[in-house]
Image 1 (cartoon, rainbow, N blue to C red):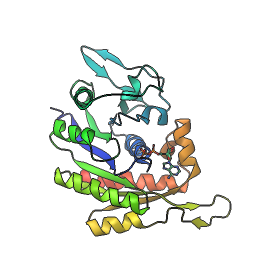
Image 2: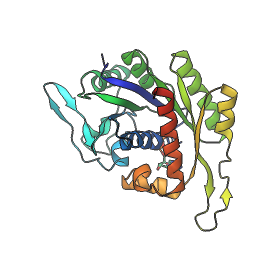
Image 3: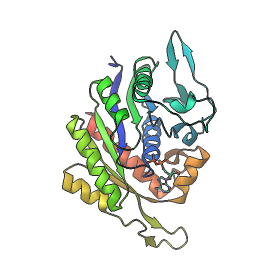
Image 4: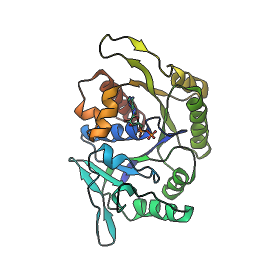
Length: 257
Ligand code: ADP
């Protein structure tokens, strides 16, 4: 099963609101910009924001011969999200465990992914049913990216996410420290709103790679509201390079080039 997908990478966070989906979107788009065939699977069932972040929230998923056809974004990115299947965007999803597992199974086994170099999986925050189901259904994954902010509460939970991946034998590709300081667009002064450096320190302490620090950057928030991925539409901004470096580090770890 799924031998047509070369590298399966899950993006995890201990907490919500730390920028996990933002990082997942920018990694997926960044890989696709390298000419790779990429899938992005949004299993953040209670907050499926990926369609909105890519500006494809009005897309409707079709099926063919009993298989779900993912939505194409550009030439080499295919996207599937529970967000595409909801009747209305504001509808909450009230589902119990087995239904969630069934949906994830469909996204994995009954979706026409074709041949992919990478499948990026955006899971809900925490270490609950959904990432566990994905890992079990795929019988393992090639790597986990852990997203945290520099506050102690987030760092504490990121350690849990690392231990969760470790317990399930998923190699940790590294930690991303998001919302790490704020660079004033007018004067360039750095204000450490949530402090900074904690993700890097946690990476050292937990003996996992550090992938990069992304500052609080109003254009990042704007890009997701506009549905225009930052790494592409804001490629001239300095922080865009951090996403590029993260993509390169993931490739360097997973591909023997
Ligand atoms: P999560 O998936 O962890 O819940 P999101 O990726 O949905 O988090 O991000 C939460 C909000 O924060 C979004 O509005 C997003 O645009 C914004 N955001 C994420 N990272 C940054 C950043 N570095 N600077 C500014 N806003 C950010």
